Image 1 (cartoon, one colour):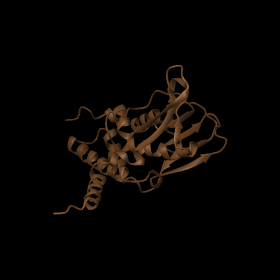
Image 2 (cartoon, rainbow, N blue to C red):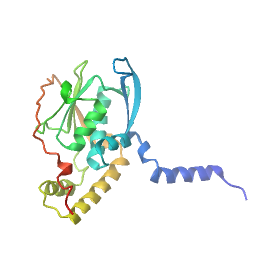
Image 3 (cartoon, rainbow, N blue to C red):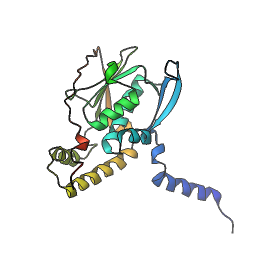
Image 4 (cartoon, one colour):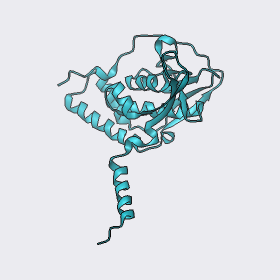
Length: 219
């Protein structure tokens, strides 16, 4: 019996695409450049994968991938060559643990060096600035991308008003949304707008609530 290897290869690729290669999509990878040692030169190009960000954050979730995709959309405007200079970028983030961790990891922004701070009063998810030329963008999620029930139940969870069963239901809703994000192009989920003459004014605060640990003891 003759085996049609081309047909088998096509079928394998389709199965792999559906079940195994989600983490290889461009929506979940970002090239960055850093210095090559503690006193080094700007030579070290690396590829950050979503799975790396998950290890830094502690778990995979819809907010974490939202953060990564939103940042990618904004950073692509600041660095059109596709390589983000993490020594030359600063960012303002909403206070979500997911969004702030994504911002720190992808941009290299640091609180102590005045290249990262948190402000819930910004009109977008992130404000990102390239330091050398001060080009600045604001990024936000498009309307009707995220199911409204997730934020509704999320607010109830922050208020500690959900039972264990309800929290599991919320997790399932977030996981389903995460799968949708993984299969989508970031450009279809987020908008980016340039801010002209934006002035970086750090609002250093430490009163934000770490919402992802509020219900850790609910049984």
